[in-house]
Every structure is written in structure tokens, then in C-alpha cells.
Image 1 (cartoon, rainbow, N blue to C red):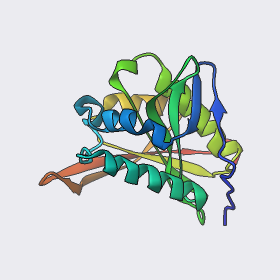
Image 2 (cartoon, rainbow, N blue to C red):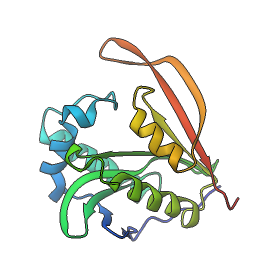
Image 3 (spheres, rainbow, N blue to C red):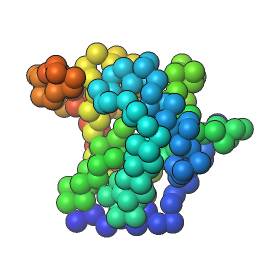
Image 4 (cartoon, helix red, strand yellow):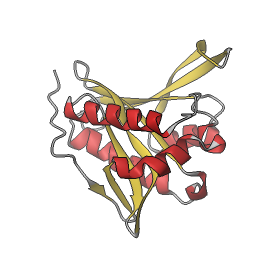
Length: 184
């Protein structure tokens, strides 16, 4: 079984970004992101109606870190500490050394290579620091930008599920892409 210790929280720096712990100081910015129709278009999750629901999400993130079962970073520019997105492994399967990666970014920052830079750092951390054997990403098949980002990082299409989940009274498809640790 994989043994993780995510305490102290691992801050990651890239050329332009600071991937840091999400805190209650990020409430308003996180609420704004999770209520942006464009950002949520392919996530197929309900937009939180109250700031208290974002507090609950942050508490869940903290619990995952404390229990070594999930880790999510807030994305900020090094030049500005404002929360502009999140990235992380929201499901870690310790028995199988595998984690599910997910990410989202404020649309104002799309097209600048920010998610690409963040995902490279998080993949590196997952394989080299966490010692993951593999990772997966579940995407809405209509999200071409996310698929292309993952393919650019070496992910391959692993599965396509027809109408395997329900959102807003509609059955939707999902696609799973995966990446195996090249050093395994």
C-alpha cells in the first residue's frame, strides 16, 4: 500500500505560478470560480448557491490533506497571490498507487498556458514525490480543450462510458484518460 504524508503541505513553485494550500481567505474567489458558467460548463456539478457551501468544499479539501487521501492546490500567479484556480488529486487510491487529477481555472486566464504549467508540476509531484504508479482524469467528452491538454502531457484515452452519470435530469457520457509513471 502506498504511504503518503501530505503534512506539511507541499507548496509547488513553477516559473510563473505558486501552487499553494487553499484557505478560507480564498472563499470569495473560489465562490466566483465555481459560479462562473463558462468555467463550470463541462464539470457537470451544481454551482454552489452560498459561500457556506464553498466553506464545506475547503473543509473537505483540508480533511483529504490531513487524512492523506486527497490533495488540492490553489493556483496563484507568483506576482499576485489571488486564487485563480485549483488543481489536484481529489481521489487517491493508496492500494493501487493511482490518483484522479482534476483542475479548473478562471476563464480570464485561459489560453495563457497556466493550466499546462500547473499540470506539469502536479504530474511531476505525483510521480516523483507521491510515488504514484498511474493517474487518471475523467472529462466530459465535449471538453476538447481539457482532452488536448491531457494528451499533450502524455495521457492516453483509457475508456469511454455511455450515459454513465446523471446531471440535471440528463444522462451524460464520460471519458477517462490515464498516464502511467514513465519511471515505473
